[in-house]
Image 1: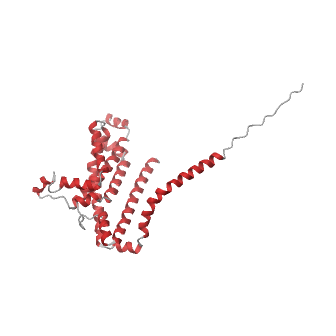
Image 2: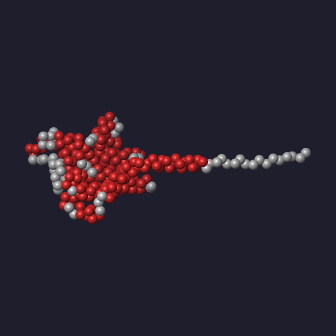
Image 3: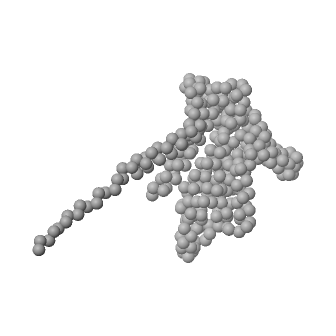
Length: 282
């Protein structure tokens, strides 16, 4: 008998050409859907730079009002960062270690200035530290007056910006491995030494990001400042307040300071992204 051998051809591979095309089509459609919001954000920011020539920018920077507003904003915002870090670090460390009802209540209270309307923050500061306020009334006999001073600008900025530092620092502290703290404690380190030599070095990225975000928020503060500190050139007129007045007096001043604030904000956000990405790449 002769055996008949049948050759079976291998099955043809399934057609996969349609799936990559479909994926590319879906991906392309999603990219198109992102354009409306991106353009809505980009066009107003770009329009600032088209309405002011480099010569106009230089002329605007030569005005005393602009220089005073820039100097005051830089000074007060840096003071706000230092004050927020000094007062906010203990609070952030407390919040990340406690899970009680009191800690949750304090955490909610810290978040409150972030969601409050800036005008409400200004009124709250005025009713607390004004001459007839809860605290200001006791300070008046001592000759201490806070409203409508440079100190009031720093207080207003700290009130609305410090919570950003506290939240960022608390997240960084919470990310430190608990076993490392226990190992340091077993080696004889006290709580302060554990915080100084273990927690801070391992959470410096979050602390630095919180400082940068606080600085950017303080630079752009308007509502609480104009109510609690007023708008006095050279004393309480920060860049946002000078922009507000510039629309009534000189539009070039408003455009110049707007461009500077946009540039500052972009640099701060870029630094935060760079620091975080450098940390994640390690």
